[in-house]
Image (cartoon, rainbow, N blue to C red; front, side):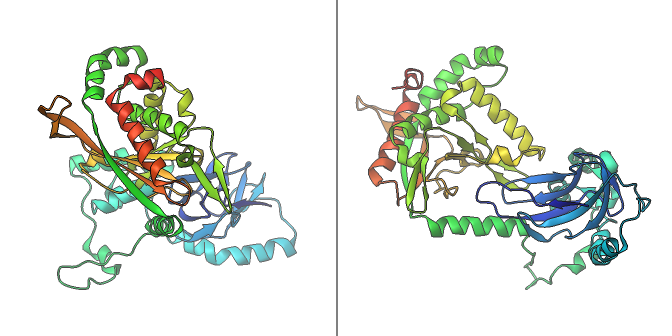
Length: 406
């Protein structure tokens, strides 16, 4: 008998929630076939079968929280589905079946619901749709995101029956609604609060004239896209500017480990991406060694993977510094929270024309962006934090610096 356990979930992630069982007790599986989906505060991941066999027991029901190493299920290698496997020793098989029965019943109780991934389930719930009325085109009768969108467009996805809402906690008032916080949201809330509690977090601000970068993009965007097959966005400029600053002020690219400071001589930049499940931060590795075209290509790839729910745990770990762009949602100013155990995070904001006094004393309307860099004051001094943000500003207002590395 082979045990299927919760795998290592990545740095600073100790637990996950069982989102959905893709296989049932007695069902045959192939090697590397997904068995169960787990949700963490960073990513949804599938746990695959290590070999061909049959699921003999399921130990954890959907919605329960599990830690790394916990047994999720047991797999009998080479067995035949529907109980036709060779008989095992009575003293071994009987207790296993008895122990598995209650959980199996609990898991089976959810099997009447159409199969959906967490992202699709959220889309259905957010739009108050009846999942049973949506035609499924996915493997094993699973509802895909495209199925939901088609049903919404055609009007075929009727609203969920009112009775379904009766099981929710009663509202506390005529104009209030009480909704139970999801386990995923609880984990996110806990980790954000831990970041505030465990770091001496401070934020420094500056502003950058985006005119030079916008002019450069306007001049070369068509040639860039034809040559490299990807659009020239703003993020590659900011990543390159951040790398320059981190090289000069290495404490912002470091982390605390007990009584030690670990300085990172590599630059793995996390880029926050919005998904239906929430904000995730895939990591672009070795940004100092990548061209701007390679960085833009990775950003596009991560964005698509995030929307499709295909980011892996490896995509989400190993970051040394993070950049988040609230400007895409219209944010003018914010104070980003550190992505532990990192010591620095840069917040980009919306570009807005403001009157600025130029060097010759004239006043011009310039496309300005506020920058906010939060940092861990335990290892980053104010001078380093402020000076590093000034370096980024200088590089962005004179993009040739990025090419000359000065």
